[in-house]
Structure formats: C-alpha cells, structure tokens
Length: 277
Image (cartoon, rainbow, N blue to C red; front, side, top):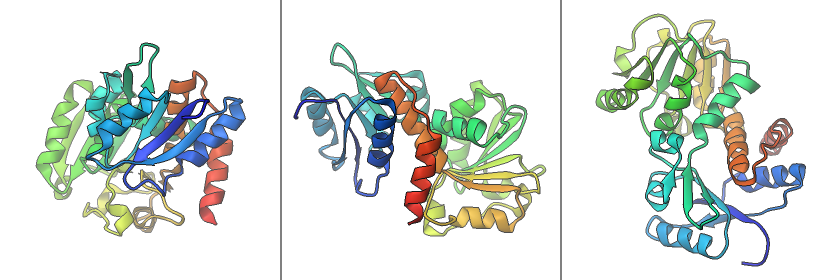
C-alpha cells in the first residue's frame, strides 16, 4: 500500500456500496484524510484477504453482506455490542496489531430514530419484522432504551422465539409467527427483512398499523420501498427508509477509527440527492 490512512468496505458484491461516498465526505469535513476503497472478497478468501489488508498497514474496514457473521471469527476481540449482535460490521486495528470487531448498526439505527427523526422508544411498543442478522444487530441498543415491549415477528415462529429468548434478560421481548401478532397497533414497526427490496410484503395483519404508527424500513432505495408504500397505504403517520441508519452507522465507524464523530446531516442530504439522480 502507498502511504496514508487506508480504510475500505468488504462485501461480495460491493460495487453498489455508498460507503466510499459517505466516508469521503466525512474525511473532508473533519480534515482527516483517508483512502477508502471497495474490496470484493468472496467468502472463501475473506479471512486471508482481511488479515493481509491489516498486515500491509490498513487501519480499518467496514464489513457488509455476506461477511458480517464470518467476520466474528476474524476479530481477535469483540466489543460488547458486536458480541450481542453476533455479527461484525467494523474492524479496527489496535496499537498492538490485533483486530477489534465492532458492530455499529444498532447504534446507527437508534441515532437515526431518536436524534434525526425525534421518535421516542422508551415505554413504546415496537414490532420488528424479521428474525435474521439485521434484527439481531439492533435489538440490544433498542432494548437499552426501555421500550414497553418488543415483538419479533417472523415467517418461521421458532426463529423469532429463539431470538427473543437470546435477548430476554435485556427487556420485555417475545417472538411470534406473522399470524400470531396480537394487541393494538404498535408505536413503531421496523422492517428488518430484505424481502421489501424484492417486492414481498410480510404477511402481518393490517391491524399492527394505526394512525399513530411510525414505520421504518432498514432497506433503502431511490424511490419508496414496497414496505414504505404498504405502510402508507394502511394509514401510518410516517413511513421512512434506512438512509439515515446507513449514514449514522458509518459515522459511528468513523468515530471508532478516528476518535471524532462527524456531522451527519450534510452527508445524509447529499446522499439522498445523489441517490435520486
């Protein structure tokens, strides 16, 4: 590697990633220059190529699909939030050359919900659709804000129940199948499935949405996602995409690496404008 601070994002595929755009803006805004590149590593080569990156002087990596779970085994140590998530989206090299695995997804979601969007979590009822890695990654930070209850709903009820059991000590949480969601409309519904991007709408009862319900899709697209369109059709008060979570988790990664948390509002505005083109 040529001299300088080297960072990047690893995925397969990864060409679509917005991370170089986001981190480039963070670097310019903070005056902390960085070389940030895309690295397309297959699952078979992931471990070896990541270790090579750090051996050659790399400072940090973001990890995206499909590597977030495999990244746990590459890290020498995990932060508490990465251990809770069972997944890593940020690697940082430490002074002794060891690799720290972190997960900034949950922190990014909570910051977008609470700080950017003004949504209250404490003492509110939250429904999370999906019981995969995306849901697992955000549960601990959400439960830390003491919601009244969190319900995880999944096509396969056992997956939802197992995930709820794993986080039971952190708050009031239950896992159910889509058809067994009960009670009145929720205050906040988070779509943590990728199904929204393929046009599939989860088979949850329409009664989960009321006129006060805020709906948040962790996915994002140039126009409204199918989940956002579905939520608006059912009369929710607001339906939002995950652009803010994308920028906020990146800002948290930047803070882990550089010790400075960049301002996110200008980057989010520029990103939305660029994506709309």
